[in-house]
Image 1 (cartoon, rainbow, N blue to C red):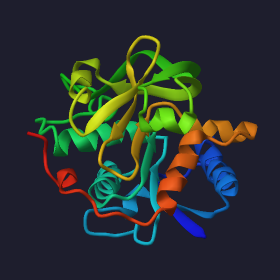
Image 2: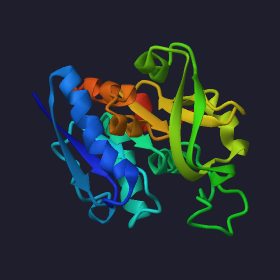
Image 3: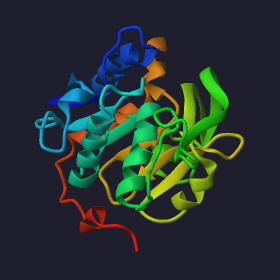
Image 4: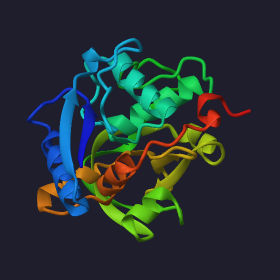
Length: 244
């Protein structure tokens, strides 16, 4: 079985995660007995009216933002969310997942990313208290969450390369509703989010793909491909409406 995975981002061979992601997909595919084709989709090619994701069994919004087109990245995330396309967002993908959902479902006025709008007074994505550039840390998972089931354990140590994350002021919005926090660092800051009633829609601030560079299969990539290999279910109507 051949699965095409759309890699939403602007490929740069100097970016560690960009070198790791195709290898992560290959290793996970081999473990599952699947052939996987990684298709890079530049963000400038994505708009609400274009369809570079057609034919893809899954989408992955990759690290290394700001993207050439923020609007393009957000359009891809929105399509994956509304159409039930298995989706993984890592690092910058996590940040933009929050931006897309905050604008569409939380109905926030002026959803901002501090890297793109440094003058924003209350950005949803804000500078981290301590930058996590080439750092590692433990993430504890919510029991029975999708990420906990993927890892098969209560916590894991993962690597980061980021300076921005969820503004803690907005963390309470992830305790109820379809989009929920399911992973936290040792300080209690949100590091994983998942969307309920979706085949697979997960964002991590860390970069699980880095495990592939050490020859290890990243559990979340295996989970993404497993979801992509299943027959596409009908998308629940709740995904198309804002929580009350």
